[in-house]
Image (tube, rainbow, N blue to C red; front, top):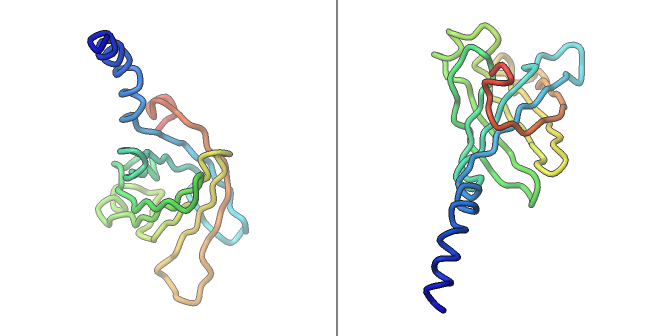
Length: 142
């Protein structure tokens, strides 16, 4: 009996194990909340390690950027990152500003704030949008 149970679990392990360690990737489209602000039109986010780490693709020209990932609730996460100067030099659509995203993984709604380094009194750029979950970023131009 015990041997049958072990065989049963060994057969099921690949099915559940692949999902447990799989990464989740979201491609999000944004629109600015004011005409005077600038936000990236699209950002891809990949959660790994059971939603403990995250990587960001903020442009087509760059490599992934590590983000600080914080769970805010059962369904929402805060991602915080700054684009390295080396990536800014290669990508025409990025700045070295600090970016903060709140993603709701249940309804796939997202908000973005760009904290510009230009001026401490200038308001930050804000945007909202929606995301789709994807299996392969190459299919979506990232």
